[in-house]
Structures are given as structure tokens and as C-alpha cells.
Image (tube, rainbow, N blue to C red; front, side, top):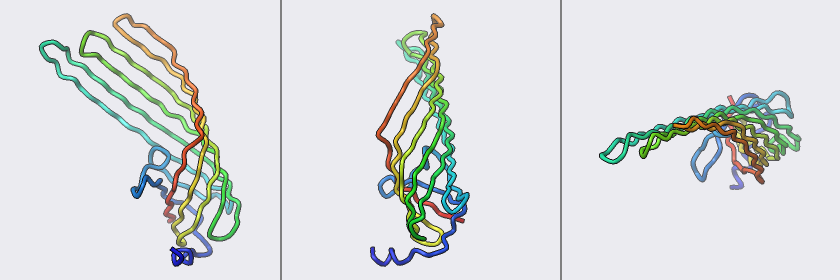
Length: 186
């Protein structure tokens, strides 16, 4: 462990990086998708992430049940800024702010009757917190960060056969998420 502390180089490549989070000993997605970081100056970093998912499931008809269907899709886009407080060439504490939005669609058709339900929700996320970036090598860094989060949901649920419609709203506050981020600069 002590030998790796001596490997950090001066004149780090504060440019553009492909970034990953750690989940145990596995690399994981970056803010829910794929993304990276760009150093705009010696103290300012811009980050961006894009994520999404799609899920489909069919329930085949039987003697007693009709065919059913379930479908979920989501798309997330996020941007953030980090303000680095330069302590040395190899370690940099920072504060971070981030905003993102998620578009979610859910559709469900029951196998029991002609009931259908469709939810369309937009989630707005605001996060803020702090972290520390440590340069292991000239082009590779590890960051540990903790962000507090606030989320607002807005949407609509439609059901049939009666074609009823409901507004959906929600609020979430969390004491945050902690991440270990690997950045590989090029």
C-alpha cells in the first residue's frame, strides 16, 4: 500500500476522463449510465452522464387467463460541476453540485380482465455534496464522494377500461449516496 502512495505523478492530465463507480470489486455505471468528466480549469470540473433501460415481459394466455403485458422504459440525463480546492498535486478535496432528470414510462395489461395502466413520470433530481480526488498515476485517479439528494416527481397515470386519469406527484429527500469513482484520463 505504501508503494502505491509514491506512484502519483506531478503535472496530472486534468483533461477529459472516462469515469466508473465501484460496486464492491466490480466497475459499475457512472451516475446511472455512462459518462465522464472534463477539467475546465485547475479548479473546475464538468461531468455528464446518460443512462437508460428498457424492460418487456409477456404473459401467455391460458384456459383461464388472457394474454398480459408489462413494459418499462426510462431515460436519464445529468450534468454536474465540481469545485476543487487544490491542496497538492496528488490530492484534491472538492464540493460538487449536480442536476438530472429521468423520463419513465410504465405500461401494464392484466391477464385477468381488460384492465390496463400506464404511468408517465418525469423526475427532477438535485444533488450536492463533497469528495476527494487522489491521483494514483499521471492519467488515473480515484475519487471518493458523498452527495445528498432531493427529487421531485411529476406525471400522469391513465387506466382503462374506464379511461380514468390521475396526476402523480412525489418528493424524496435522501441523506445521500456514496461512490468511489475511477477516472481514466486521455
